[in-house]
Length: 607
Picture 1 (cartoon, rainbow, N blue to C red):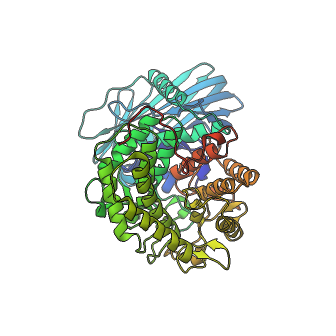
Picture 2 (picture 1 turned 180 degrees about the vertical axis):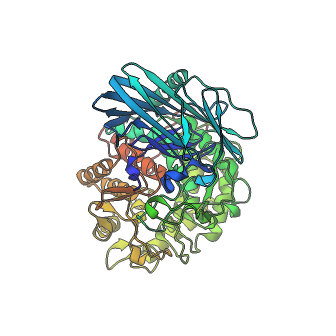
Picture 3 (picture 1 turned 90 degrees about the vertical axis):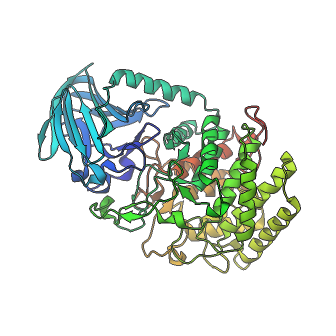
């Protein structure tokens, strides 16, 4: 039986991540990067594919767990007949090599602990060569080596290393797992207690710079910390999630690799970082963006690798049975080859926010934006694959056209508000043409609602973004009609589907659960429509389905009360951050996240 997705907490060092369950088992770890092959892959198969469990002997799920304040240091506690014990899990800031540190701390009495670890490289396919070393063992296979160092003696049996030991009140027993390239010497051993203090100090200091002072602060802070953990620090790229192939429906085939950087997700994240005082992350993302998309705008990809890689070929990993038998397991993502017109608008909107926020200038940024808008002018009238990356025939998706309008609108405003050069009269004409076309072809007058694509009767939760980007005001009758229609057709037990699967044109027969960020968009749009109490009710409904440590996956099944899809999902968490700010009674005076521009926040110059 697979552990529920909501059972997992996140560990990370801002270059990769691990997932640890409520049973104390690390079932997912890719090293040295988010998108590297996993050495613990039980999450997508079973224990034969690699895991590391550290818990009281014979115990099941923990009694309670939490992060240590505003940090990414996890405390997992068990209360047993003999006493109480805590496992402190974290990944230190990257030094010579990536480390996972686990410290067993006796809280009271005396507790017999059990450790079991099985290393399997290449997503659980490769059994390593294991050797005993001073204070632990090493495991080597292909390009990878892992070193486990601990004062506890582990014995090898049935391809697993195990140990039992007793911890008393006040005692602390460390375990340190370190990855290194197999072609290099063993890395130096870190001091686990010093590493813990450094990790706590780093996260506390970073979190203290957050400027958010509205309601739901604990939820917002946990989301911001999670988003920070999903940034690949060497380049500034933001991964969409830490995992691949967690299913959108149990037993289904909608299983995708999210360990890459979608321009759409990252652009929305920039808003959350800018508006909450984390400007270094915004600058790093902007620099990554300009490097990744530099060159011919015709070659713009909707997603890139962590370093800006463009080739993300999709393949199936057939030796893994999939989470809860949900096949196939995929690595890479074929959607990287799609045309999604909304991405142009997202990027141009994010860079407009960047400029309006007063971040320091970046050479050549406006020239690059000019290239994007010129190319968008030549393609905006064509069909595309849309926000949801459907694998059916391209369509004229309403959301895509609206975001094309955003691209031209932000270009016009760049000239009008910041004095940049460009053919503003022509851009205004194109902007107005797109607006008129969307209102004519993308709106069902009989039902008083925007539809998923031109000529369609299907609805799409993405049309809730129309007022959020300033295309129409939130109290426009067409928006009010769309809200009501979407709630009538797509709301299931209080949570929104992305679209009706029967009308999806997405190339799949399987169903899926509600999409978390869509329900957040509903709250945001209700707020813009003046239905503020209803908006808060919807938003707090989403807060209620976070797991015990505040994490959200991509989707939620309200009937089975299960999280589904990849986790933690950046799209879900950035939606939470931005909408909390918009709805907060303490934050309303600051204005809308996307419709109104902020004052300059760091004295930077406009470019």
